[in-house]
Image (cartoon, rainbow, N blue to C red; front, side, top):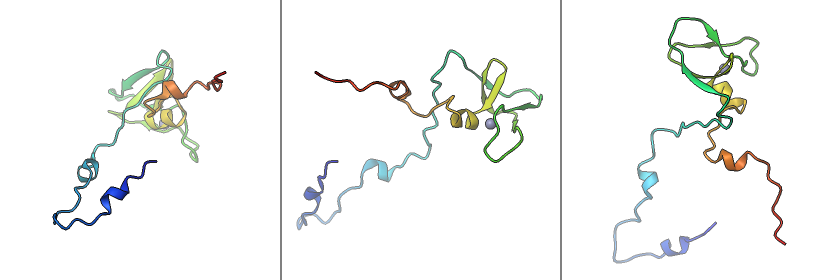
Amino acid sequence: MNNDNDNFDRPSSESTGSVPEREEERFPDPIPDTRLYVPDNADWGVEIKRDSERIYCYAKLPGQDYFHLILSGEIYVTRQHERYCLHCALRMGFLTQDRLFWQHRVPKKPHRVL
Ligand SMILES: [Zn+2]
């Protein structure tokens, strides 16, 4: 890590103002980055629950012994006949929030430069 703090420690007798805060500290983004990515995107579909049919997520949450309902209006992912809520799909690795998943997913052998 770069430590450039030295420049800010000098007392300034001319200026009475303080060092302006960094932009992201003054205006934190109120919307979290909820973008999701599907590494195996050929296998998966995305649906919005629109009808009144009772459908259930195919995965159980840890500590629960029942399949939970997917609610009307909920976005869920499908693979053939399977349905998963976004929470479970993320948990099980079907979805990722890692924007660079395509770089990270393949366990590469370390490149040896000879
Ligand atoms: Zn679920």
